[in-house]
Image 1 (cartoon, rainbow, N blue to C red):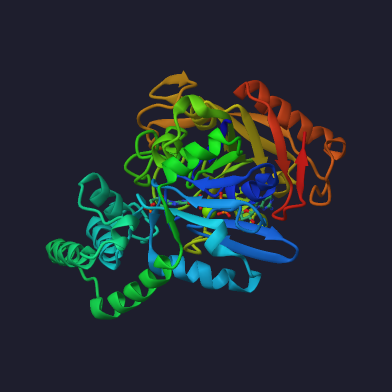
Image 2 (cartoon, rainbow, N blue to C red):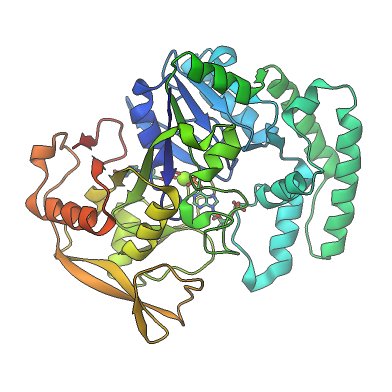
Length: 423
Ligand code: GDP
Ligand code: IMO
Ligand code: MG
């Protein structure tokens, strides 16, 4: 059986959580393959609004297995909080949530190192979520990390001590003002580790192999977005994992040839939270409207998201790098009411007009070239059928499909599970 893949094509927060939840009914297993609690995936259904950080977005569907893959980094403290927030739903977590032994742990000192690193950079800071993501992946590739499977061994606390002591020395080295009480943080951490240990740890690559042999359907859930990919994103203003399609292979142990559909998800406009270049960013009323109507505040940090027009140069690049086979367009409802909409189809780059995503997209090098489109006025949020889509929105969709050469199969018109149109 094949594995399908859903990932973000922009700078994150495209609405991955909502769509994974919508698609879960078609899958036996939902598997997160990278990132950690830097992610905030929002689900709305039956009057509930719920934000997940580490736990896959299929968790609310009875009978679905949710797997936290080896490519994910887990902060036991945040994980425990996520579990506490799920308590009211009476889910059988021990059965429906499985954790890879090879997933790495975020330690309290990783969080402190993230803060120290950001403080030391001053204005050049990444604007990270301060969840310890960068330092944890650094320890993973530096071959110093502590993994979930280590918790089953007797000597893991010795490993922990040695690593935490080293981190403290590194924090001192940064020579910035980071206040902390490690004893307090460790008490919280060790308590949370005990909760984590009560869950089901598995050799997830073997589990997924067997699942495929047995004809189970699997959807791999991405976090962040393609433009935050450590290799292909707007480096250094990126996260520390491969958010693109290849990340699903390394983050789950799924062979490339087993991946079938690649669902690429994007907003009808663009947002970004944190630092880094953003060619179509708006500083005018249009951007303010997108932020306000779209409620563009980070699901993890609460920071306002920067907003701008849809950037097809960046989107084409993401479609290409991921091999997207189906597109999903989110938040069309937020653009209702604009007389005209702009879509960036090329960049003026150092005196030339280009259509590919160049090495450097800093504002001094790149000016977006826009095509204007007619806006739509209708309230889309009650629509459930493709036949209800207004003509101007259909024209917008047709234009994007032509430019991207991939069909748009789902149009989302509101945050709720039900506000979803299949085409
Ligand atoms: P994720 O990180 O990709 O899962 O996305 P987030 O949850 O961080 O951000 C998406 C936000 O948009 C959330 O607040 C969702 O509830 C909301 N949302 C998702 N789809 C739509 C939509 O079609 N229209 C509107 N208005 N909001 C949406
Ligand atoms: P979801 O899964 C949006 C951004 C941060 C920062 C950069 C690096 O909800 O789409 P990190 O903490 O990873 O070291 O931060 O990446 N970032 C996100 N932006 N959505 C996310 O996740 C993000 N996760 C990280 O704002 O600019
Ligand atoms: Mg998010």
